[in-house]
Image (tube, rainbow over all chains, first blue to last red; front, side, top):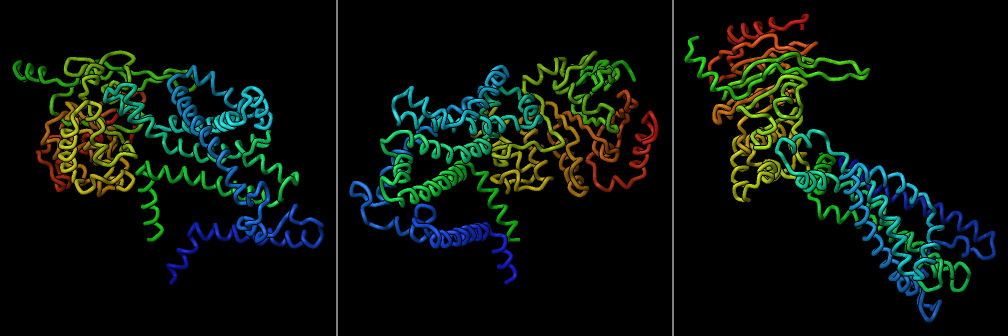
Length: 280
Length: 267
């Protein structure tokens, strides 16, 4: 009995549950206040059940599509471009980290300016990219890639630099070639860091893609979001997109975690030993 | 000693340390003599301990043999070649104070790592690793990952990895100093057994007098500031050595002989 109680106390699920319930309660308190005091409460803060009902409400809100259909139809465009940009950014980020590790000169040249790219607000960069490409699709990909490559590059580089001196000395004593040192020691060592980078980058790539959507009227989640805010269609499209993108953002991060677990046996072992310790 | 045995001994020299000095620069840019004119020979099949307190340069000396450090003056010859040539021929096995295992590799794959680098076939690697696992008594743990093992078991994996390449010379830098007494005692016996079976030359760095006396054929006593060779003591206990030898009067005599040969103040 005591054991089950401590187990529940220690479980991550409980913490999450408390958070979710807490936020729901606070949200509803304000939703009731706003309902009582404002003329169009759904524009400011609708009730949670109203948002959820709008997901399943078959009533058409735009071009004969229901709320959910609008969200899903537009999500396809946005997310596929975000995904492409994310993959390109990941490749560039990883390659750049390896290059920076290989050459101190490249690291010295690249590192400070990578920071600068990161400092430019994405809202300022997006219109420039759009003006250059004249295509909202490729702009989404480019912006998502730019946002992705930085956390991937810096985290991977941190991983490459985290290898302790004695491992190098061991490889040196085996007279290992440079390529061997990379493939057998450095790259495997940086994998956990690389995935940390991916977990940070994935939701960012989605957010960036949605932001780029708002620049033009050719569809995409961001486009629908701004139209809904301008009352061109039901305001619930806006709320649904907010909920949907929050869920997708969290899922994209978890997806990276699942992939990591699948490709690295080390991760599984770590979890197993952790569970054993908790059980003991 | 007659001329003949002198000649045999000369032929038998595996590692010749010739007037080796190492000078470092400290933070203020002053020269610090880590090793001062060290000169002695290590013979084939010997178990040599480099013994001394911290700052005596015992690890520095080991690093000059391993080609991890170039002496400021003097030189080291291994089998009449430079340490670098020997390293490139992959004849050194090294064991550090930490096991230095690759966390993403299983125990067996860790032992196979140097064999992979040396281009052994898959089957040869696997056979050799199995043999080494049996030697250190970790066959059951072949598919475990390092973090699932205790510190003593991890160090045994490191030793198995070093012996797996069948090195001519095994260099060990305080390999047992992070372990508890019980584990250490067991590993001492394991190491001696492996050494007697394989007949390799072992250079063993330690700051523990009992450990040095129990394991070695000879003990190089190093004193600090500057690091210098104070004495070479023959640890003439018979082999195979057993735990109860530690309680014999002769063991005690050897320990005090070693202790008294340090220079530069009490320990």
